[in-house]
Image 1 (cartoon, one colour):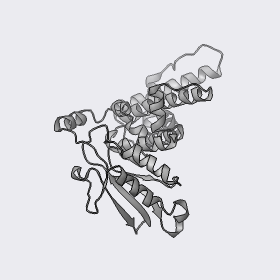
Image 2 (cartoon, one colour):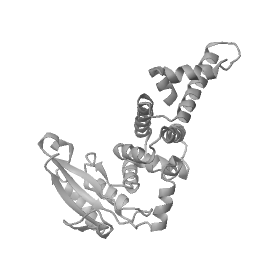
Image 3 (cartoon, one colour):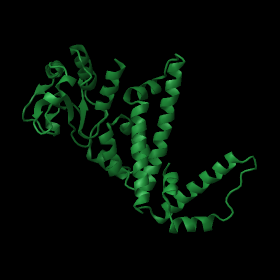
Image 4 (cartoon, one colour):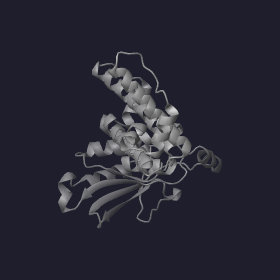
Length: 286
C-alpha cells in the first residue's frame, strides 16, 4: 500500500506532463487503489499549464511479460469509477480536465493511458509571481516538486530553472538536506518509532534511492559546467574557496597539529584559475 501511495504522490506532484510505468501492478485492487489515490480528488495546487499523466500499461512482444494482460482494462475501469470520461479527442488543455484516452505507440511498442487530471488553473498574477522566483531552488524544495518528480522531469526542471552553477550548487545543498531528513526517517523506522506527519508526507513522495540518483545527476551537471568553463568570475572564486577549505580540512584530519589555513590563498587561487585540474573540478562541485 505504501508503495502505491508514493507513486500516487509523485503523480499528484507533477507540474508538467510526465510518464509513469505501472508494470508492478498485478491485481485489479492495486490498480483501483492507485487511480483512486492519484485521481480521485482534484489536484491540490493550481497549475500554470495543463498536464498529462501518461500511464504505461502494456508493451509489445519483447516486454509483454512485464505487464498483466488486463492492466489497461483495470486502469480504465478505475478511471471511469472515479468519474473520468473516455475522450479520444482530449488534448493537453484545461478543457480536457477529468478525461482520459488510450494509445498504442507503435514506435515504442507501448500501450498508454493518458490521463488529464482534474485541476484548477493558476491566475495570471500567480503565474507572474512564480516567474519572479523561478530560479529559487528553495521554493521548489518547499513544495517537494523535485523530490516527487520522476528523474527525467527532475533533469528537465533543473535545466530550465537552475541554469547557473550557483543555483545548481544551492539546489544540491538543499537536496542533501532533504536526504538527511530521509536518513533520519529511516533510522526512526529501524527503531520501530512512528514518523510524524511531516516525515510521513516526505516519505510517501520519494525514497533515498530515488533522491541519490537525482543528487548524482545534479552533481554531474555542476561538474560539466566547470569542465566547460561556464562559471562566472565570482563562481570561480567561490569554487576555489570551497576547494581550499576542503584541502585544509583534509590536512587537519591527517595531522595531529592544529589546523592552519593556507598561507597564500590569493596566489593559490591564481594558479588554480590559470591551470584548472579535473581533481579540483570534482572537489569544487561535491
